[in-house]
Length: 301
Image (cartoon, rainbow, N blue to C red):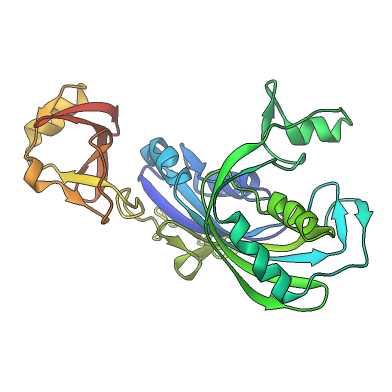
């Protein structure tokens, strides 16, 4: 059984759910606690951050980090699932030219509203949208506020265009393909989708699911687990040196810290609502700062 805590930068293949991917790791290595940040569609491949042990408490802080996707829109067809897996709803012979596509990209940058696909994990009155869809029930999904930081064309053919996008939490690339095509006076759906980056988790440093599962059963530890602090981006962190502070935190007690020793991992100026305390590369607590007094909200000891 693996008792270590930390992150695995997993590369999920196509045609498997995110749940099945982490469940296969859970069984193979007898992991007690495991979770993932940011579900990937079964048809999508790419980076899937995996939390092991107490690192699962940090998933909400990874989920809000911007994500990068590389995808292709096939023009002329809208489907029930907004990807190539669905049934065709509408068709058009019109395919937009590259200049027209480029001209409309700016309309989507920044904050916009988006209606998630009906085949998605969005909850409608307590039930997942994809389950309602499979049960042939009628339902509506309310628009959600989403964010696009950057969007560029990487390749263009007559009926297909490939893009790279950097977007925020809750963004659906499939919805973007549907809406963007309609704005261009045609129809469209996603024909390929890859997540290449989630914060510090990148495709380049990821490990393939099959490669991870091939590790011999005799291995007691997975050697690709990164420390809990190493994958957290844009945070305020403080390294604890005194054992007495660790003991106080384990009981949920506040401790005094030196504000001058707080490390800011980015150039962004944050408030003091989320301070991360670490010990030798592992997060031990998350809390807020009141003067020089740290008050813990979550304990990972």
